[in-house]
Image 1 (cartoon, helix red, strand yellow):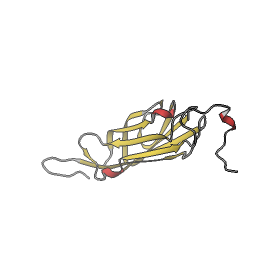
Image 2 (tube, rainbow, N blue to C red; image 1 turned 135 degrees about the vertical axis):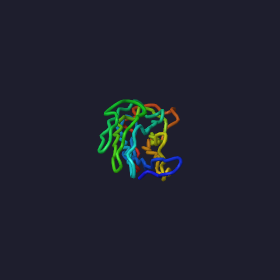
Image 3 (cartoon, rainbow, N blue to C red; image 1 turned 60 degrees about the vertical axis):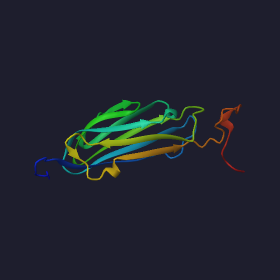
Image 4 (tube, helix red, strand yellow; image 1 turned 120 degrees about the horizontal axis):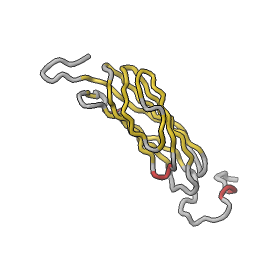
Length: 157
């Protein structure tokens, strides 16, 4: 549906949600999922998807699968993608990495957002950003510990 008047404008309810690994210790893998949706009523072309990884995440790779749209198939590092998404369409980004040894905590994070292109209004802007966190449960994060950290445990006897 397009609004008719002196300044016609398209409407599309874009949204973003995140999920994935909630706890990952040093040298352990994590996977985050960022899902971008278009609740309509209009298709959008050239919307912006951004996912900024925290500095302590180490290198990451990602893939994108589109159902009812187009996105860049794969990449590495932060995501800055220009996408097309039909009304009712979905994009799913899967981000994989490994928490670096001695990474400062307490979390590895992915801050995701989607922005409609110029000339399109998003009637529900409150669902345009999401934050996913993976706890680094190391209790010693000050860097003063020594020894074989692979033998350390968070288990309480």
